[in-house]
Length: 138
Image 1 (cartoon, rainbow, N blue to C red):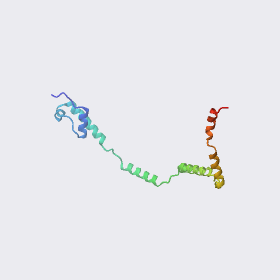
Image 2: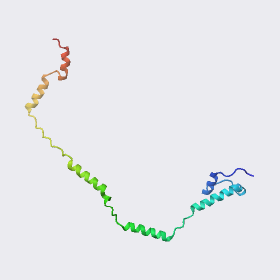
Image 3: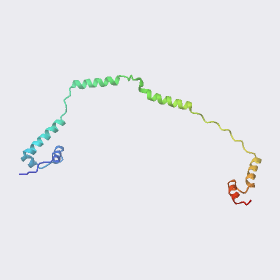
Image 4: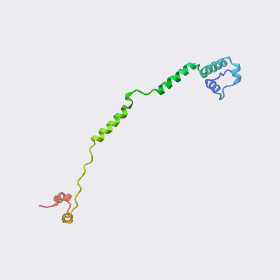
């Protein structure tokens, strides 16, 4: 007699119809046959459709239709949207507009030439004067 009993995986494979253990062992072993009967009874109990009264289903449908036809009476349903609109309006109202800067007047030719000649007259940059002072002898 075969002493190896079916494993849980073999029972699950047989439940789902993807194989299973040795059929001859199931026929000859009373312990495995009893376990298989328990597994198959549990599967039947789980997969059985529950009994629901038609009156219960009709009442449920009426309640759903009643709620669909009823308007929402919650006055705060639009509160978040209204708060956002108010915040945007206050922000636009308080935001300072761009100040108009005065238009610069064009320089005359004499002012441009005077600026260029003042830059050209000093050959030494202003940043170099402190360094030059270090090397001058008094």
